Amino acid sequence: MKKVIIAMMVVFTFALVAYAAGPATIDLAKEWSTPTTKKAVMFPHDKHQAKLKCVDCHMTEKGGTLKNQKTGAAFEPAKLGIKGMKNPAHDEFCWECHTAKSVPQGKSCTKCHK
Image 1: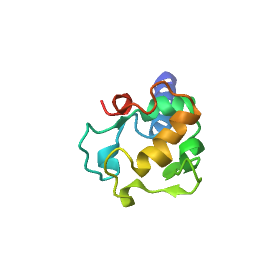
Image 2 (image 1 turned 45 degrees about the vertical axis):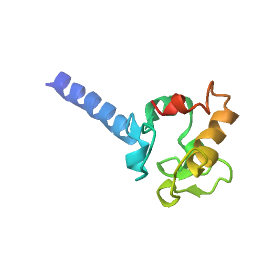
Image 3 (image 1 turned 180 degrees about the vertical axis):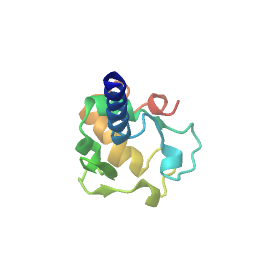
Image 4 (image 1 turned 60 degrees about the vertical axis):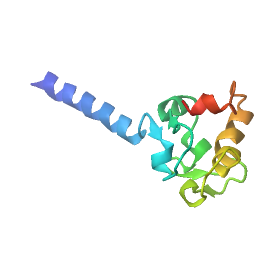
């Protein structure tokens, strides 16, 4: 009986940690309510979490509101009317970080729009 309880506690702990970390992948077109002419970005949240701190991209350690990578202010893409290549999502969020971190092909369309 002890083993069952311990096993359940271990499973619960892993589930809680996974839930707190957020989803592994995020469809940014849906998340940001943005129509797209290219394939939607399936943001690999789990891969970014493995390399970065939550506050690198979010306003707090708890996640939630995104941070404008240029200004440090709140970044609210759903309110920005994102269209085309020259848009705030690229300029103030994705590309700013990709450039700073020297991500190979970090500004290539096919790096994210797959």
